Image (cartoon, chains in turn brown, cyan):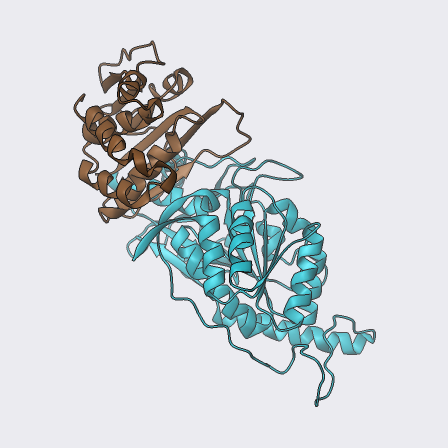
Length: 177
Length: 351
C-alpha cells in the first residue's frame, strides 16, 4: 500500500510541518518516504503545500496528481485538492475555515473544527496537530505512538513546553474519525 | 542510521564529509539552502567559506583554491552555471580538480525557479570554449545525491578534471531518508602539481595558456586521452525491469523517478517495459544503449526539456529501433499519468 498525501494551507498554518512530522514518523517505522514542498515565488498569506509519500516499496515519482488522502486547511486548498482525491480516498478539512462540505460519495470526508478544538486546548496554532491526528488515524498510514516518539525527538526547545499539548491535540483529532 | 535530509543540505553535508576544504557560492533558488548550510558549518570546522560577488567570482575562486591544492566546490542553478562557463573551461585547461553542483531550474534566460533538466547540453557537451567534457553525474534521489557528491571529489582528483553533479530543483528541495557516510579525514597532500610555495623545490606553473599551436595541440591530446579514459572507465547507469523488457524508457534524474512509476503501472497492464537510467550523463552509456536497442522493439526518452539526452540516445540506438520522446519544459515536472499513455503509444506504434 502506498499512501500519497497532500497537505495544504495558508503559510503559517503548519502544513509543511505536519507533512514533516508524518515523514519522520514513516522513517521511524522504517518505511520508504518522500516529502516535497511546493516551492516557488510564494506570497505572504498565500497557500503552501507539501506532498508526502509513504510506501513499503521504493518510491518513484515524488509528486502525485491524485492523492490517496488530502489534508486541507483553507478554502483554496479545498477547491484544489478535494476533487483530486482518488476514489476511496480520504479528505480531512478544517471546518472552521472551510464552509463547503464535500459532496463526493466516493471518498471519506471529515470536516473538523480544528481551530475551535485547538483553542479549547489554549493553543490555536495546534490546529494542524488536531487535523494530523485525524488524517493519520483515518488513513491508518502510521501509528499515533510513532508521532509521539517523533515529537519527543524533534520538537524545538522553544516549543518543548507544548509537547504534551501537541500529543493531546493529535489524540483529539484521532478520536473524531 | 538513516535520517531525513533535504537534498540541498544533504549534498552540502556529503561534501563536508568528503573533506571539502573551500566552498565558494552565490545564492540562487533552488540551491540556496546548500550555501546557507555551508555558511554555518564551514567556519565551525575552520574551513573556507566565501559568498562571492557573482558566479564568475565563485568559479574563479574555486580555480584558485584548487590550484593551491584545496578540495574546492561551488554550487548554483542554471543561470549561475551559465555564468561560470569561462572559468570551467580554464579549470579544465589547467587540469585542476573541481566539483560543481547544478540544481537545474527552468530556462532559458532567467526562466523560473522550478525544476528543469535543460542544462544537459551545456553540462555534457562542454559549455565553455575549447574541446572538453566535464564528468556529469545525475542523481535521482537524495541518497544517490549524497553518494555521487562523495564520488565526485574522488573523480575530480583522479582525473584532475571538473565534475558536475546535475540535479534539479526537486532533488534539492525534497526530503528523503539518507544513510550518511562517515566523515573522511583531511590529509595534507602534495600530488606534485599544486601550488604550495616553491620552497626547496622547483617552481610549478598552473596555466591554460599555450601560445605555440603545436604545444597547445599536444596539451589538448593529453586532455583528450583523459576524456577517452573517462569514457572507458566511468560509465554508470541503473536499470529497472530491463531483463525481459520488450520496450525501454530512458530517463535520468527526476524524470526517471516519474518514469519508474509509469513503468510499474504499464507492467500491471501487461506491457513488458523497463527503465534504463544513465547516472553518468558524460560519459554517456552509448554501448549499453546500443545493446538495449538490439533487443527491444522501441524506446521512449523522457526528459524535462525539449529533447537533449535524446540526441545521445539516438547516437547509441543508431536507428535500429524507433525512438520516441516525451518532454516537458519551463520548470514543469511530468506526472506518471502523462508518461503511461506515451508508453502505450510506443507499443501501438510498433504493432
